[in-house]
Length: 592
Image 1: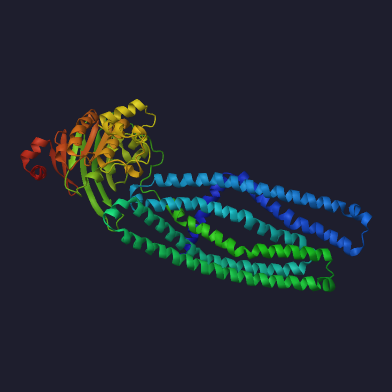
Image 2: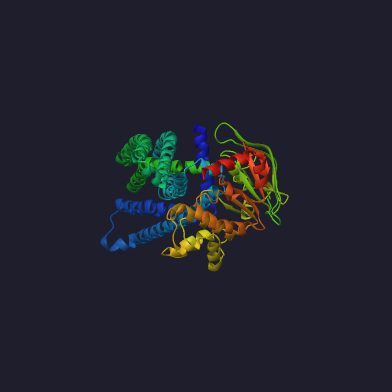
């Protein structure tokens, strides 16, 4: 487990490092300005003051000699402070610029990966949790860079400068301090390793909390109409308690780390006091050098006293980035093959050949199709019917490559869909699912989603063809009406007609209607059937329907049962056979 955690941390460093090196001039400026800031203000000033102290301690300087003797030092001190402030501003600029650029790149990376993952991936995760993980991943980089810029680089520079400046002057002191610093760093790093797991656990619990909150709010209507507010509150409280427990464990570990660090700092300061008191008498150390020793060591202890919080910040950053790093490393369940070509559809012929498919994400494989064959000639309108679980919707998902088959082939105009790009495949198929998929945008944007360059007149015509114009014109803002998240401001029938208008606007050679009229009342369904008939003309169409009246007039009806073709024919012939289709028809007509 620890090795796995470490590997995730390493991969996080890889993603952050790759994005940072893309903008390496700002990163280099950040390092140089941070180092310069530490040198000029932390080491330059005491070094100049030490020269003044040594000069005063050796001989008295009269009032008329102050500027002649100390003038160069005064000017040097002013210059040193000016340079320090310039480095400080460059440090702020380079960090800020780097954070803006890399945040953009990391957010884009996460969005691209999530958009290109399979539906199986998304079906197994909370949407709200993925949003939280994306935000944490990008924000963790900003936190990490701030820690690196304002703490890690100056601390490292401080150690180097102390060794370079004081080693020739007081080698024994530098050696003793170095030994204690090495021990200190090793102790803090050991604690850091122990805290890694706690940070990952806390971040994971926080992501689950975000997911649960999103799930409850998204389905708030179901919560209220079922009177389950208390149940959702208890569920939220349970996960919130997990966050509380893991965060408390992380706090205790960090406080322990801080206590250890403070003890080591006390030891180092005691050594410094020993040298300050007897350095001149025992080792002949000059007063100016003693000033530098105190100033440098005091600054070093202040920086290393923050090492515990620095490690905590770094740990938290890697913990926040952990879940998204795992996602970024996940292989795509549905991926384009290397050098995949675009799909070119001229006729729209579809063939399922010796198809085998089973769901494997539920632990136990669940076979849906085994050696399944179906040929749909170009331009044919075919209805898929059958009981729930017979494989109707799965067949269309396979055609769209939302999931991949294990064996066999799916071909469109003789081109195997596994060898073409997914984008080009889906642009050739207008898809209207059982549950309308609308964005929290205007009605016009939703209709034109598959064809963003459409004119308003084309959008309006699509609404007319989908029998949606009547209710759109009655809305206060018309086509500029915001539909709400998932279209909650519209009725089920209105949402479905917007989805059908989008399919009309897409104008693809292949049409898939998955219960496209299920959300409509009988009057709306009758009004829209003519629009669908016009839409299907000249297009290869696959219509899934529980209402058999929807498919009765189609060119062909295929009855699926347990992933196999039970019957295949036209409406009249299937009724005469008295088989599966006739039974379904009889039950529906009796219900009417």
